[in-house]
Amino acid sequence: MNWNWQHPDWPRFRWSKDRLKKAEEQFLVGGGVILGAVSHLDAESQERLTVEAMTAEAVTSSEIEGEVLDRDSVQSSIRRQLGLQTDARKASPAEQGIAEMMVAFYRSFGEPLNEEMLCTWHTLLMQGRRDLRQVGSYRTHEEPMQVVSGKVYDPTVHFEAPPSSQVPEEMAAFLDWFDRTGSSGSEPLPALTRAGTAHLYFESIHPFEDGNGRIGRALSEKALAQGIGGPTLTALAATILVRRRSYYDQLEASNKGNNIDEWLAWFAGIALEAQERTQAQVEFLIEKSKLLDRLRDELNLRQEKVLLRVLAEGIEGFKGGLSAGNYMSIAKTSPATVRRDLADLVDKGALARTGERRHARYHLTIPLRPVSAVTIDKAGNIVVAKKQC
Image (tube, rainbow, N blue to C red; front, side, top):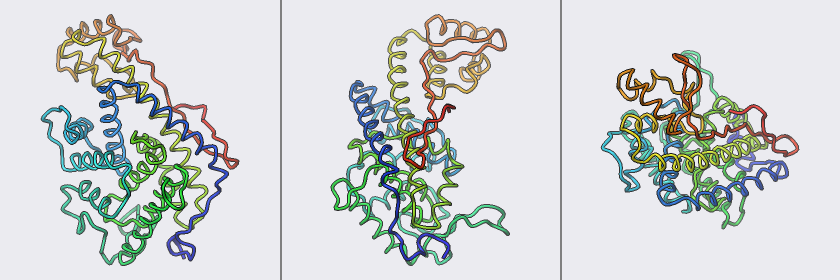
């Protein structure tokens, strides 16, 4: 027996509750802090936070799978789905699809999970895909569903999911488990435990031909949101993207048996780190709103375009700092105009300059709060790395 679902104890997962106790408590406290901070934002800022959070999760969840989407197109699609003012930017089927899925997820975070909801998400996510036999339904192909890497003639099999014939039964059991372990269910689980177990459980079944990773991460978000009691998105996919290699290593190490203690400890650390990233994003958005309000009607169109581009990088900041060459490329203008515009942005307090001449770089005056890696040790202590990322 090679895989977790082939063991006689499947899917009776085991873990140490004591190891996750401190992490569960901190997550609930942190969730309350974020919901409180968001509640103090004005309606426009709450709208902006919602859109940017959904955009970030959509783009980063796709990037984990190696699919690079245009952030502006995804954001435009999300705004359109929410009935908000947007531009006429065209989006690819993949960008439109994940935007629609994120909005559907956000609106239904508190609703019970069922097969129809999952299949709707899959239909939205797979828009434009002509290479799949099943879209919006569980897989039915007879060949093994394997996660592989390496050369075609000599692949490495990292995991093999249950045969397609078992998927309906496995998914019925999964949906029943998700319902029972919710806060109003008969066997409620703490937020981190439920979200982490849901992700591993779903990925082990791998019910769809494609898109399982993105849907699995959305399920974790759903469980976390239900645990907090609010639809505020935790920056889970963005954090997993930073830890992508570790993510895949942990999934592979956890699909051999049903003791998932190490997986849940890893996931809990990621979720706490994601929560810190979310808090940093909320603080950044508050300062961003203040900056834009202060500069309203004071910038020319070139300056506004460049400043918005720099702000779009969020808490990580513009990589390497904004140079005159970057400004020229974004604004499509002359060197002389670039110098005047940048000097004016510095005078207005929008940007701060470091270096001289061709080494000059410009950075936001908004304080950026780097986020550190979080792990849970064997004793259940929350360990925050000294090195920030």
